[in-house]
Structures are given as structure tokens and as C-alpha cells.
Length: 236
Image 1 (tube, one colour):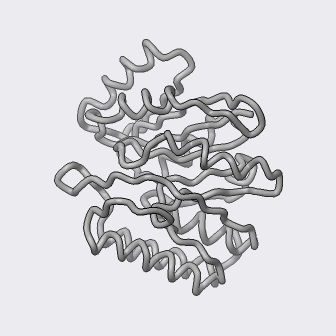
Image 2 (spheres, rainbow, N blue to C red):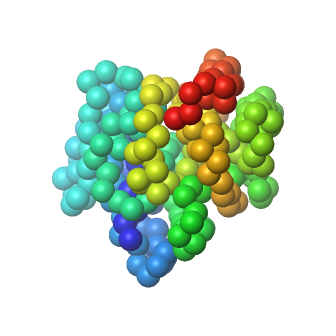
């Protein structure tokens, strides 16, 4: 079994090396037996020192795959580019800002011991975790509630950064997003197919906007529209 770790990165020169180190360090036991890892990083037109940091990482990390966008195109576009380069049986999205810990990978992979499981979300709301702001927390809960009302699901964290897919399912979704609407598009298309989204609790260490957090209220409105669009539009 091989796990492809997809890391979109934009202006994260201070954290990307630590994220890669953490991904490499985590020990994966199943399913079943040992799990091989590959890391695919898409540098989404960073304007800081990210490109140089990645070049240094590549020089000392055999097998690390790095793809560069000439201009910033958004998280969704970076993930779509990464999908073209992954070779794993499973794929996980990994943010480059240290809010999520790869130590949660074993828990995220465990449900795939059941061959019928297609997708797993890591939920920040199934165990106590810090919150960046109340508005950000309740905005995320609102998105989950809207998804549940629209699609009849029971998910607790629609906007989580940890989503794990069987790779053939991920490729079949014909994703179109450029920015943060990746999450609601995936959720909408998966639930329209009546595929169950499994959730496991994960740890979360939020950073502030002063520390570089990029998502804002405009992305929240876009996410709501995306959930509505894929509920009533043509199935993906």
C-alpha cells in the first residue's frame, strides 16, 4: 500500500521544511502491513523563499516530487496539479503551515482496512482542540451544518484540511476548483454519489492571520455557494 501526500504550498518558507520532516518521520503500520509514502509538493507561485527551501529539501530527500506553478493559482489548482503526479493507492491532503500533525496519519488510514471505505475526513470537532477565532470556528461548523442539510449527511468538519481518498476515487471527481472551494466541491460530489464520508478525530493547532493564515470570509461564502451548486447541479 502506498500513501501519496499532497502538499500545496504558497509562501510557507518558515514551515514547509518542518512539515516535510514530520511527514517523513511518521510511522505507518497499516492497512495492511507497512505503508509506503510519497510526497508531492506543488509550489503555487510563492514569492518568498519557499522555492529555495524546496530546492534544498529536494537535494537531500530522495524521491521528493516538487512541481512549480509560475504564478499563484490557488490551493485547489495546486491540488489538481499534484493529482497528475501521484502514484499511491491512497492520497491525503496536507497543509504546509503546521496546523495539522502527520502523527494523525495512522488514525486516518485505519478505516481503509475495510475495503468498502472510500474517503476519510479528519475532524477537528470530535475531540477538544484550540480555536483560532470564534468566527472561524463557527463558520466551519456552519459549513458542516449546511452540507448535512443539503445532502442528508452527518459530518462534523466539512472544511478540514485532512481528507484521505482512494486515489481512483479522487481522480474520478473531475475537480475544477482554484482556491479553497476544493473542500466543498469534494464534499458535494462525494455525497451526491451517496458515498459515505467517514470521520476520525484529529489534533489541530490553529495559527492566526498575523502568522499567515490565508482563508477569509470571502472563502466561506464561496464554500456555501459551491455546496449549493453541486447539490442541485449536474452530479460530478
